[in-house]
Image (cartoon, rainbow, N blue to C red; front, side):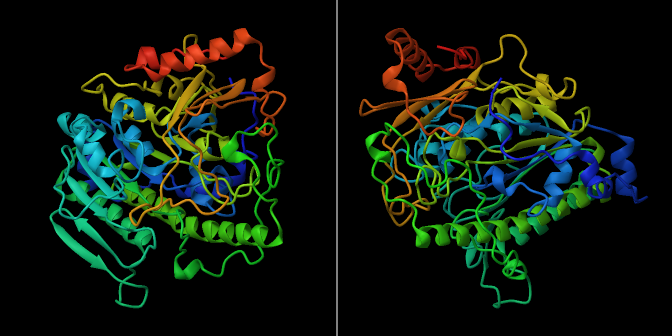
Length: 505
């Protein structure tokens, strides 16, 4: 179990009673709703996946509806991503496999994006193919994989498809809605709202309503993947004046240089007034940006409630990776193995999940496919690296790991990231762009092994902010054990092998 505190104070259920009450199922008496209630089927699953959302945005002030859901369900306090980069992380989510098994290591190039995913055949074995084979209607909306092109056929397993090309600016993008490509313009180019997060909210609502009206009790899986709050951090016009003077929530790592840092992390200039003002401005935009994500969550829950589907639906919220903003003297970015970048929210609400649960067992994005399958009553069609989290979800409130549960997670990253016209995560000066590494994150420590021969080890009990690299002082026996553990995990190809993570060295 991690010795780190949760990255923000937990808001008690009583503090959000009014919002939670708003989510209580109130069923209209329409024929479609009565039919859905009369014949409960396999549970529905709604998955909201955000882009670059960090824990410091999940607050009552910025995302009250999400906080309300958190009070209703389970929060994983030690949930991590397999790579703090969009496309590798999403490939792991879809397939349940680590990057060394998906072979997706970047957003672009021969090892990245939709092209690498398809070249390796990953599209033929995903959450969508599993659930489709079980009779689910499946819908993918928003951001799929980087470099997805409008001419690409809908991947196997998906019944409904509404995927954007370059949606980061939130305006002026194309959306492939099943077989039709629809262009959405700027904020003033049409009478309707073209803001992408709002468009996805409307389409999600329509999908839920259509399931009740046209497909009766057929279960569904809906993923709504926003581009928010990824740079350029474009808030909806209605929220663009919120939070004047907002400051970045600084931790002890903010503006602090690491000791014994590897070469890529050395010699960043201290954060001066200009840099700190830029960080505060970017954080304010991100806070404004997630207001629309919070609206999307509220609208989806309302649609589920109206159709009578809420009581038989698991609602899941997460992010593909986090973001550092000033920590370790770095300007805004990701890619690193620090908790700012790899530790993200995972919140699950649904039948039999105790309200206000806090799950401290380790979990990773490779676990989502097996978890969704287990909720639906099936297993992945092929062996995967992750395992189902349902044994944790259905335990008593405040659950920790069972004996034999992995005591940590593996993180893989191929770097440095190169600049290019199709690269949405082009590294800005002093934002951090590490070379290739493999990292092991346990409750006791963060260990990073770089391809260039450098190492990092942070003792989290003494150094929870990951500031002091003490690898050089470790006993030779500990160094050997860490390297052997990483070598084993780097070659793992199934859940039992990939779960053999020890906590101490």
